[in-house]
Image 1 (cartoon, rainbow, N blue to C red):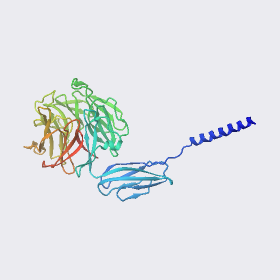
Image 2: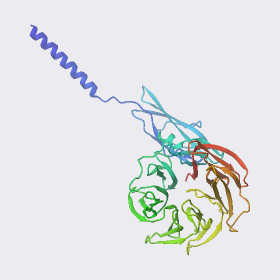
Image 3: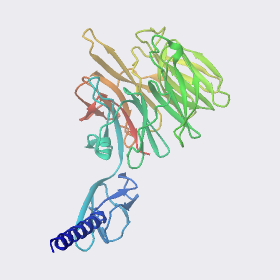
Image 4: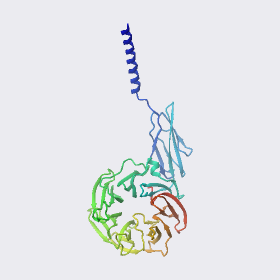
Length: 436
């Protein structure tokens, strides 16, 4: 009798464990709410597509933040007025509800690239409202990616649907989707050593790279060629002299050399290199509407200039005319900025005082008369770190970096040189780039 009793207990226990095991293996659907957007920064009248990523939901309730709602699974919406809108999705499965939100910015915006600091602080991107000269988001990259950038970006450049960042410390070319500002991979590192600037043509990204300690060996620098569709390196053009800024005009790639008194001219078909001898090393290039270029000719610590100022290069015959400007800035990016009709070119000057404090001014070059105006538009700017122009109203934006450890400012001036306001941004702001 005992034997039968224990057999029965064993059988019941086994069945119980079997039923428990089956229930644990079953997948119970979990309700979640979520969505992605085709863009998060748009102009009024521009449609946004919302793609639902909710799970186990059967009903959807959208509130776009402007008194408009929808029950569609994947709606499209257009905002009529500028503003910051909170978009809310409530997903339901009949028993439970879950909610997900994001913000959409409608208006005329640009981005400010903040280099960061030498104490380990990486770059940040500030969202800048061009109509109101205000900052709705201090670090837009962090907001969109839920993390900080991994490098100190030397420059930024948009081509197609990507915005590229030339990152140093660590060396990496990263990019985000131009519409959503989401970074989807770790970036490009193959043969990327000290990237500086870039430009693209026919789906090829040309990147100026110093290649290492170019100040000790000027022969190690090069131009890296990257396929913008595959992110694969497809070639390297060795170019001594530390190429800095790049520009393309009349089928030629122009490279400002920072460790040689030359501008390199690369035929884009044959990749043959010729040079334009300059009176100083060069750092920054701006192209005018006639496919000619302006180049900053500067004195550096290692290579004093015979004459510093602005060189205007005729790209048909690669000859230049020099327009002297004492103390033109040797900064690496955004020392020049044109107004919207390219009738004036603002040029940054700067110098260190005996206490190594950087102070500068902004000169005005009249493009028609090919002469600098007799007085600077602004002067006495401590910590000047770059300039830009707001293409909505031609306001001059001067980027101020008081130190490499504290937040900087944008000083906004009218085209007559009247200071309008000062806006706080990230550490070492250096350039303004528009959303295309």
